Amino acid sequence: MTEYLNTVTNPDAPWTSIDDTEENILQDLAAYTLDPTFELYGDFVNPSPEWLSTENAEKYAGCTMIFGNFYGYSHAFRLVTDDAALIARISAAVQRNKARPEYQQARRKMLDALPVLTYKGASIGHHYRYCGGWFRLTKIIHLTEEECNRDSLLYMDRFEGIDWNGRTIGAAFHDGRQMPTTANWAIYAAPQASAADGQALFPLD
Image 1 (tube, rainbow, N blue to C red):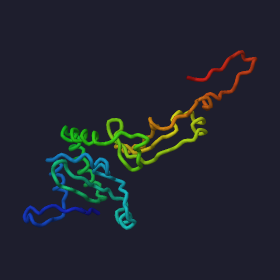
Image 2 (cartoon, rainbow, N blue to C red):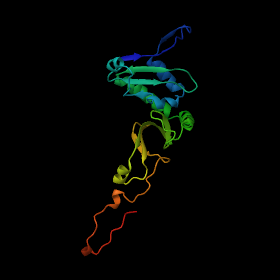
Image 3 (cartoon, rainbow, N blue to C red):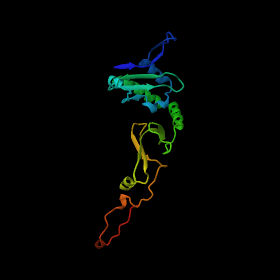
Image 4 (tube, one colour):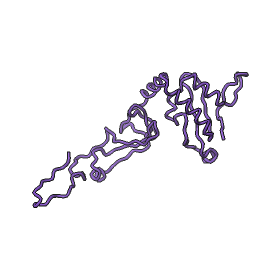
């Protein structure tokens, strides 16, 4: 099942529109630069789209959403399909487009426009710069002192997200709360040697 959900201008009658086609999409992928901001919204070829309605979730179960537009050229394409060969052809064309210097330059501009994550500015669902790319913030975690002591953690406020490769990432907020002392960390709670051992135990660095 394949559905083209957007229309394009009819070249034979410019005042009318026609359904988009694979040929139109592949032709423009070869000629124009993709808009990198669509990396933030499914990365052009999304095998696991999140549908807002139950009706669409049932209708398009098992389908891939192909969705995007171009940088400096208007052709918004959007289709849903379970045709593996079609997905492979468009995916290959997208990857060729993304490998071009023009796309990489446009992507750097996109990343420059994204904020750096801070504890004070964190908002779930928003995108932030991260390690040469970006990620979407999915969770903010506030640890207790007991949890930090158990796992020997200094920073009490942490985050999780999904990066541009679809991987789950997580770290501590550099500007979040910190433990007032590390004296109670579990790493220091090693068994004490007996007097007969003749050994002294020291906390690890």
